[in-house]
Image (cartoon, rainbow, N blue to C red; front, side):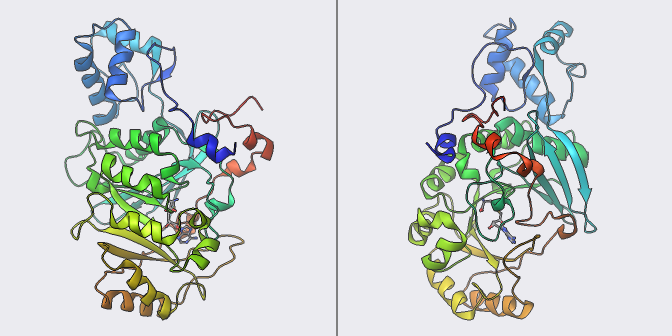
Amino acid sequence: MSLEQNLAAAPPPVSGEGAEPGRNLIGLTRPELAAALVSLGEREASAPMRARQLWHWLYYRGARGFAEMTTLAKATRGRLEENFVIRRPEVARALESADGTRKWLVRFADGQEVETVHIPEADRGALCVSSQVGCTLTCAFCHTGTQKLVRNVTAAEIVGQILIARDALGEWPTPKSGRMLSNIVMMGMGEPLLNYDNVAKALAIAMDGEGIALSRRRITLSTAGIVPMIERCGRELGVNLAISLHAVTDELRDRIVPINRKYPLKELLAAARAYPGANNARRITVEYGMLYGVNDSPADARALTRLLRGIPAKVNLIPFNPWPGAPYGCSSPAAIKAFAEIINAAGYSAPVRISRGQDILAACGQLKSASQRLSRRAVRETAADGTPSAA
Ligand code: SAH
């Protein structure tokens, strides 16, 4: 069984009802929190209400410890302290770009690392969250794709990336308006639809109105095209969808986005067309990286408009961001402009994604953590549930 199949079959990492000393409360659903409280002796009848109080402290106030949870009885706080932890990932390194973009190298309890990026605008900002340590998809132009998949990121670790960003931005308690972390994009390292259960659980926590309270309309999930998961994502999560298209023929896409060999353009576009909740007011984002001399001709632009016919889409043109050793260059500004004009003329908006955080390698496709240093053997021996074996 390949590592990818292994991961697809992996059970959710957090399960079981009993209290395990040191168990992290972050990443648990409300019913799981209630069960955790029952395991400490809370009555079944009052557990949901207590879980709600706890939720308020964890995700509305951003509490880092139990002592500050003053609405809970002292004895309850003590029992929580003895049996549970509130664990965020560690910030191994924090970088800030000249343009205000911030990148955190986030280290998990087992030493694995991902990158999380905050892209601020005047009155809002998006957090780019990673869903896997490394990636299996090996897209030819993506830096993360040169890094082997090490493991899926757990729900707690996905939520943890949001919490540390909120900590750094000072956004506790959850502000009603004017938030600098106003949007989440699942566009960091990894393919979110190959780690669906953890992503779904984490996003449900982020969307809960009594906590982090980010609406599904402010969350965008980007996929390279794991077609069988797309409909489910729309139906269950209702978040915005972005697809990483990058090519208008299967011949080219097979080469630069190899998952296309499994799920070709026709199937991907059919899934986009059928995406639950997409309409003209809520369009699917089609990401298209501008690669010099590869996919950036006027003929490519015209073919793209034909492919998108009937799909409520907007095109996001992404100037290729170079990384050390990258085999591509970025299209010229004139080529990008001409490409955009053809798309516009067909009735689709085609903004050019302004590259942010390039000086700290935080731009699209530049993310790559130090976990690449892991030996091949350690990668192979990473267990299906994401915990590395003793190696
Ligand atoms: N696996 C998901 C999410 C991560 S990538 C996906 O493929 O959609 C986020 C976006 O950045 C994708 O559209 C990806 O194709 C794009 N990207 C990757 N490398 C890039 C690079 N070097 N320059 C510009 N965009 C890049």
